[in-house]
Image (tube, rainbow over all chains, first blue to last red; front, side, top):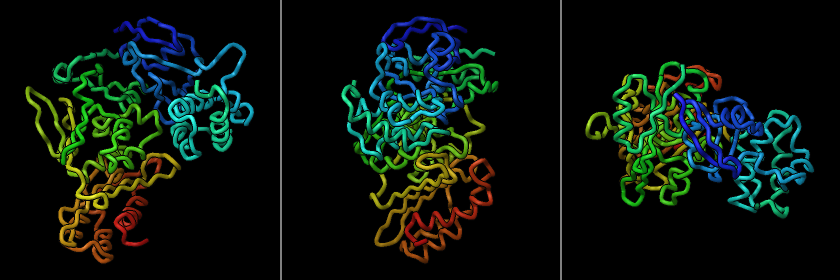
Length: 158
Length: 272
C-alpha cells in the first residue's frame, strides 16, 4: 500500500509515495538522498536520527512518514549556507566536539531545538537537551562546551 | 509483508478500524509501535492512527484531571497546573521522545517502560476505553491486568484525581544510565494523611512485573498508621507482595527484589 505524501524538507516542498509503515528516516535517506540524519538503533535509544518537525526535536526513525503530511521537516542539511558553517557547527569544530561524527547530526539538531527556544541555556539545560543523544567516543563534556559556546556566538539563533 | 495504514479523522473511525480488523495496531506517538515496525514485527498488518483533536484534550482545572490519550509528555510539561506530574514526565526519554510519546501509549508500554503509567496507578486513575458504541471507564489496575488479552478498542483518555497535597505524591525512578535511562525500577506513592494518619495509600511499582503493579502489602502496612519510621519499615518489608520482577539487560530479578524495599523506604522518608 503506497500513500501519497507531501511535506517541506528543509524549506523545499517534496511530494512522493511511501509505504504504509515507512519511517521518516528511510524516506529522508533512501528516497530524498538526505544522508545527514543517521540510522543508529531504529529503536529511539540513540538520537542519531534527530530532526526538527515544525521546529521540535523528533526521532525520525520512530516517526511514521505519513504523519508529517504538510509539516516542516528540517535535518542537519538545513544548517548549511554555502561554504559557511552554522555557528553550532563552527563551535563543534572549535571545541573538538566531534570525533567519529556519527552522533553529531543528532547532537546538532537537538542543540538547535534547544537554542531556538532558549538562546541562553544553562549547562544543566544543555545536558537535558542532549540527554536523548548517545555519544560513544567524543565524550559529552566537549559537546556540552560547544553548545554553550555556540549560544554566545552571533547567528546561533537563526 | 507491507503494512497498510488507516488514517482516521475521528476517534470513532479509529475505534471502528481497530474493532473491524484483528491485525490492527493503534499508532500513537510511535515510540513503542514504530520500534516493532522497524524490527519487522509480523503480529500486526495494519496501523491505525487518528488526528482527532479530542484525543489531545487536557483538562487540568478541576479536582479530577483529564488527559487525552494522545497528549505528549512535552504537553504535560507545558502545563503549570500539572506540576506534580512534571518529575514523572521529565524522567522519560530525552526531549525528542517527550515530543512524541503519549500518555495513552504508555499504558501499553512493556516493562521496563511505563513510568507514567506507574504514576497514574498510584493516583488511582481511570481509563476511558471505547470498544463498541459508547466509551466505558475502567480502573487502571483492572485495565493493566487485562492488557495482554484485550488489545481491541481504543483508549480515549485517562482521568485521575489530583494528589491530596504536594507532599502526598512521591515519585522515584532508579536507572543506571545518567541522566536518562530505562528503569531498574520506578516507584510512585500517593500517601494522603488525615488526622496525622495515612488514609488511602496507593503505592505502585514499575519494572517489577509485566505491567506496573500495586504494592498492596506496603499499602496495608501504612494504612491507618502515622507515616513514621516503624510504619515505613513495615511497608518496605512487605513491598514485594504481588510483584514479580524479571531479569533483563538492566538488572536481574534478584537485584530488583533486593533493592525495591530500600528505595521505597527512602522515598517515603524512612531514612537510608
